[in-house]
Length: 325
Image 1 (spheres, one colour):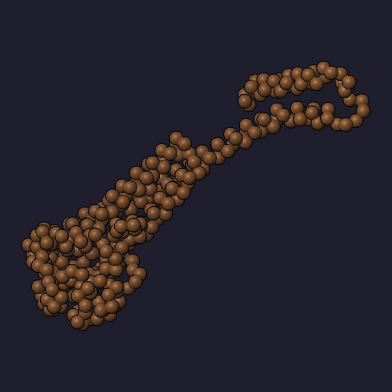
Image 2 (cartoon, rainbow, N blue to C red; image 1 turned 180 degrees about the vertical axis):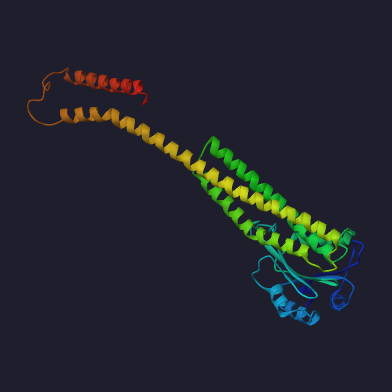
């Protein structure tokens, strides 16, 4: 028999919203009975595969491999007796990035639910707490609808944070554009792209799940799945909008920085234009050859200085008249 740590949680689903926790031995026996039971396993435990192959020997090897695969993507595979379901939720664990999404793998049929996790997922804890409180799912279809709803509900704050962060950087670009804002925009676009990569197939999974003809997916469960489908579709639309807004903000930032650079270059060009003739005169008067006018006059320096000041002032006046300055 596997070590107890292979089974993270096990309970019967009593049909009234409550669950009765099971020991390891009870979980193994109830997995073979017709009464609905949920067993939650640690996918990294070395005995998990043996438990699944022993206690759920009717499972297709494809389903077993999918339940324990290191890398997965959201998908749904229908079998004669049940369905293999893989979903992902945002990573809300401590010191983790939300876009590093956590997978939950499930085998679901009318009499048993087997879920496997590689990392902690708070939506699973939510269902456990609800079963303990007597407000949990009542059957397999309700379980799947509740789990997907909790997964999507926990995505809501993350989506809100993305919108708020984009609003902040957009305001920053409008008020005081800086090069540092470019990295923030790139990070937001990257997060939106990663989220969309997982949300899009997850929407397809919920749509396929709603269309299944299993008796345990009743009409109320299908209505809840439709609500979940609408929610994830809205998230996808929001992510598309975030990506487009981020691109627009990035373009505005590039334009603002380019305008700032152009203004700086324009000022430098005007300064160079003012000092170009003055530099020519000082260079001409600085040549060390005989016959330089005023070389023997004590007032020649001040006369030349006044002439150059007059020339500079005349250039500034000319530039203002031409509205170049």
